[in-house]
Length: 189
Image 1 (cartoon, rainbow, N blue to C red):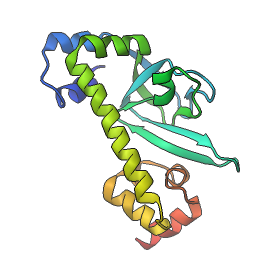
Image 2 (cartoon, rainbow, N blue to C red):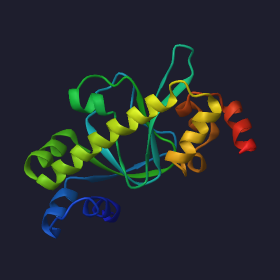
Image 3 (cartoon, one colour):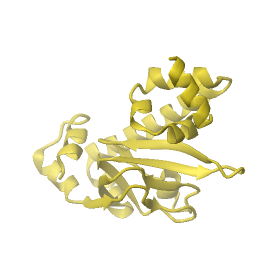
Image 4 (spheres, helix red, strand yellow):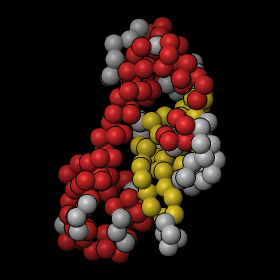
């Protein structure tokens, strides 16, 4: 059950088996159905998820009622509604399992207890925050001024398996283009 999580941690930090087990003991197994909402809009986020199997996404609806996706959490990574998790304010987005998923869940209090008590876990948290910030900046600055074709080329360059893992509708909502435009571009590449 903890193999993926242990691999994630040990690939980023030198850590004893004892500390690794201590970390893992704070996570519980959660099985999510396809399309299950794990955190609802206007709910306060109470925990963090590690994806053993499946895929999660953070999304909201724009003023026109169209879905806009901000982030995907793939197998072997962490995912949560981070602003709500940190500030304990309501989430302005949904966290959804887009496929049948096996997740490891840690409560906010246990998560921050580990951050405070285990230096290796604190380093992983810092890495999650830094990589999240860097990826968000790349996406924001990369997408500003890009046309639809340039956005698709960008995603192919920086996240090569992205388009293979997701439906056109979800990928298009992340790229800020229509699914039909994405289909046309993919057929030309």
